[in-house]
Image: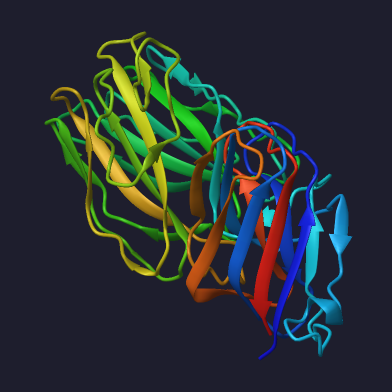
Length: 371
């Protein structure tokens, strides 16, 4: 194998989450390349954050460098597979390979009867929306335009959880959940990108859990492909915050009230209620293990754990590789050096993104790879 390196300076990104600054793209139809190192050096005195994701669609960069024989470590051979260094700012963002959480729509709540959920912001075709709804009764709900994933009763007689998916295709679906009478109901929609884009996006669905205490158990699932997005979903017949979350998970829902709730809560009916949606990537296929979500007091609850499958054909090497914030010092930098090189498959890429909604100022990026 021959070793190559290529470097260039990006322009400033926009202030948004998951905006790319640089990407090594492999355009070859059948061959893979292997990245062993990535170097980042700052050219502007600002604090910056970086995160590395595999990509499946190239996007539209501001500029592209095409390596030649001078990029070979011994200056003997031009790259055979045609690797390209794309530099930001990107007018169209590269598509990240593993599923990722985008945002959640506004909470929907009602004292009884139907409830209207808020749509997630800035949708794109093939985004997967997951609606999680909890009612403080045992009344079945229906949701036109959506496909049911799970619906079942929780502990006691005041807890019922339902989960639905919708794949966005350019038009916002019905957002009214039909709930005949019953008690208080609360729900929300979380949007994910990079999920399987044909048939059901659900790789695996666990057994529903139920109880009346403060520990909301989620039964283990066994995913069949690498890089699934695990969703820990639960509801309670009280307006209780969730803390601590299941190990490794982040909260998609947050009520706009004082303090951190890690869920959507409602106090408009009797009893009060809450619904939670937590997420994390499982890098390797296999058993997830069981998890526990914790509410701040005892109340009837229902739960379920599921896995969203990555986009069809994805070959996930590992989840995102994060780097802590760099200080505001010109020339500050860091290195990703992989003990096992990261493989970039045919028509795939590896890109450096900013994981926070802050401008990533111009930086120098160097990728080292073998082919």
